[in-house]
Length: 77
Length: 315
Image 1 (cartoon, rainbow over the protein chains, first blue to last red):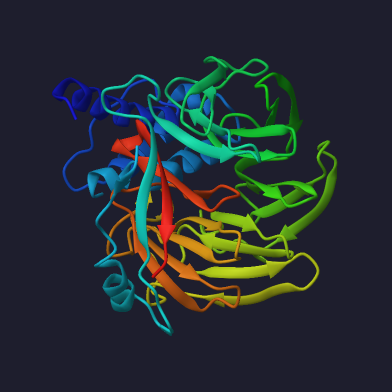
Image 2 (cartoon, rainbow over the protein chains, first blue to last red; image 1 turned 90 degrees about the vertical axis):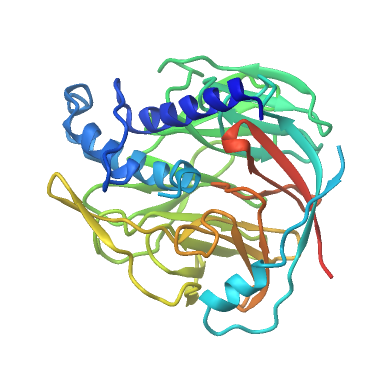
C-alpha cells in the first residue's frame, strides 16, 4: 500500500466511525478507552443526534455495534 | 487475478483452542480469484455491503462514496447510483445489501426502511419498517427478511414477499436481556432453516419459522461479554459473531469477533446440525462474509478499500 493511500485509509477509517455514529466531529480515543466506546459517548452527547428524538440512543447503539465489527478489528480494539 | 493465499494453518488450532464439542474438522484453503478496488485505486472508498445476482454481477455498497455500485463477474464497474443525502435513492450511512430476483435491497442505518433498487440500479421505492433495520437477507424463493432492533423490545426478524408485503415474523428472544444483546446476524437456508449468530453473545442458533429453535451452541467457551458503562448505559464490550453465511451445500460459516483468536478473521464451518466440520482464517479482518451461487466467498481487504473473492479448497 502506498504511503498516501495508507494515510487516506487511516482517515477514512476514522470517518467511518464518525459516519457510523453520526458525528460531526471526531476525537481520537483516549488511552484506556476503546475507540467505539469513545465515539458512542460523543454520539450520545451530540445535540444534533439528540434532536432525532426518542430514537437517538438506538442510532448511537447501532453505530457502536457497527464500529465493533468494522473498525475495532483494524485497530486491535 | 489468480493468486494462492497461504493461510489456514493456524485456523484449526485456533478453533481447537477456543471451541467446545469439537468434532471432525477440516482446514480449508483459499485461492484468491478476484480483487475489486485496492490501495492504489479509487474504485471503492470504503465498502460495507456486498451481494451477487444469478448472472454473476457483484453489487457493493460504498459507505464513504454514498453509492451502490455494480460490477461484472470480472470486476469491471458497470454502473453506480446514489449520493449523500436522505432523499429517495440517496444514502447517509449505507450498511447491508441483498439481491433477490430482479431487485436489490439496501439498508441505510439512518432510514427506518429498506431501499429497493432494480438490478439496473434504478431506485424504485423504500419499504417502511417499524424500527431501525440492522441487516437484510434473501428469503429463498419467497422474498426478503430484515432484522430490526428497538430500544425497549427484543429484536425480531421480519419477512416480506418480493413486493414488500409483510409475510411472517420471528422473535428469537423472549425478553430484553440487556442493551445490544439481541444484535444478530442471520442467513436463511432453502430448506427453511434460519441461522442466527449473536454479536455480543456466544451463541449460534438454528431456527425455523414453524418449529422454533432447532439448536443452539457456543463456539468460544460460552463466557459472557465484558461490559462497559457509557453515560449510564451498560453495554457489552466483547464481540463474538460478526457474520454468518451459507454455501450451496448447506454449510454454515461463522465469522468470529474479538473472542476468536484472530479478530475478524477466524471462520468456523458448521453443518446443518451445528457440528463443527471445518475452519479457515481470512488473511485480513472482514466484517462480513458473502457467498455467490457458485460458492465463491467475498470478504473485505485493505481496511475496506478492496473487495476480494476467493475459491474455497477443501482437502
